[in-house]
Structure formats: C-alpha cells, structure tokens
Image (cartoon, rainbow, N blue to C red; front, side, top):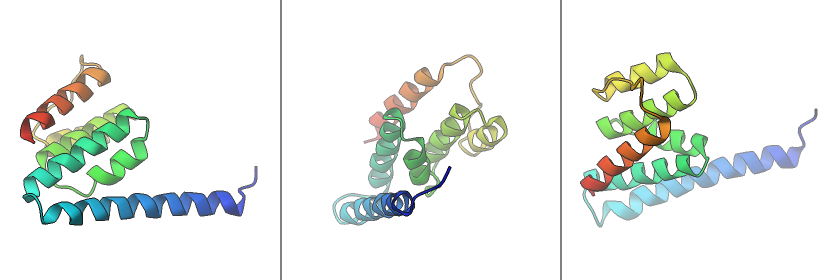
Length: 119
C-alpha cells in the first residue's frame, strides 16, 4: 500500500488547522473571560469532539491542560482506547479512580454534566 503525497499533505494541513483553531480559541477568549472559564469551554469542546468520533482531536486538546478536569477527560480517553495503565495514570492525576462497572457512555455524560456546572 502506498501513501500518496496528497494524503500526507492533507494530514499535515489538518493538524495545522487543528492547532491554529485551538490557538485562536485560547487567544480570543483571553480578553473576554477568565482562564478557568476558558479551560472549561475548551474541555467541553474536546469532549464533544470525542463524541463526534474524533478521539485524536480530543486528545490533542486535553493533553495541553493540567487541570483535574482535563486529566479526567484524558483518563477517560485512554480508558476508551483500552490503555488501562495510561488511563489509571491520568485518573490518579485527576484524583479519581477508574470506573470498573460504568459504561464509557455513562462516564462521558458524567464528565459533560460536571463540566456544564462549571461554566
């Protein structure tokens, strides 16, 4: 299987646009809201991206934030990809325990409900 240059270019361009989008969101909100609200809105967006099936974009966002909420989403994402060791690491950083009987869908909703109370 060969990879065409256009495929590589579109992948790189997609990553550049994702980075520019995040950069723009951060700077547009800096002047209009406090840092905590900005973090929460970006984290809600990351969770929504995961719900739309874009795990990679969600992960790219949360890995740049060091808050308990970001760490919780980060943990959830690694749990979703069945990377138990990494998930446990991030649950620990979020001061949480990895759920053993809760579905991924239920945890996603729990995180979203919690973040919504913080905005």
